Amino acid sequence: MSPFLTQDGSHSIFAEQYGVTYHSRYGAITESLHVFIDAGLRFQAALKSELNILEVGFGTGLNALLTWVEAEKRNLSIRYTGIEAYPLPLETVETLNYGEQIAPTVGSAPDFMYLHQCPWDRNMKLSGHFSLHKKRIRLEAFRTSQVFDLIYFDAFAPQAQPELWTERIMRLMYKTLGPDGCLVTYCAKGDVKRTLKSVGFEVERLAGPPGKREMTRAWK
Ligand SMILES: C[S@@+](CC[C@H](N)C(=O)[O-])C[C@H]1O[C@@H](n2cnc3c(N)ncnc32)[C@H](O)[C@@H]1O
Image (tube, helix red, strand yellow):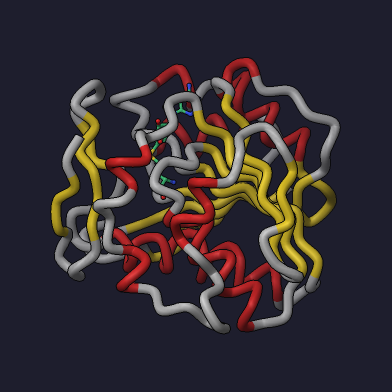
């Protein structure tokens, strides 16, 4: 798995097993900021400063890093849970340029490599504003009694992994959200939106990041 440069100068990775990339070729950081930070985090942070976030597909940790940056900048208190079935090897993560592209907000924090070096399956307080719990588990087996305000649904596309976009999974996502919680995803496929609606979500179509006409935000 070797990183390649996307059009905004940030790295992404090609997943050979699924034949897809971890991020948009038009810009990994640009896409993450647009879909997860702007349409998800900044939106919810306008309503409350303590947020419980669930990410499906922790991957390179880019969404977690950008979220940590926002937490420091905006004095938020974020508890971040990242689900990942196939953690990337540290040697691969070390070659990614996110640490250089996203300057630390205060001193050396947020620290990109620290997101990866900290242990799995433990709740870790990485700063006064950001705690991380990386769960090494398949989404299909994930169960929780936690209530989330926001879900970053960043699984590989439905064509590559249809088993992660099913009614059963979306019902689970719906159940884990609290009142006024929402799920954001880069995916705007009609089938996915229909599935989200069928389990009770109110679905919003938003303009997508470069290279994509639309993205989706779904409300409980
Ligand atoms: C689109 S990538 C995620 C990108 C990531 N959010 C980032 O910023 O780098 C999808 C991720 O889902 C993970 N994944 C694949 N199958 C999974 C499963 N069944 N359960 C949980 N994670 C899975 C992959 O290993 C990959 O890291």
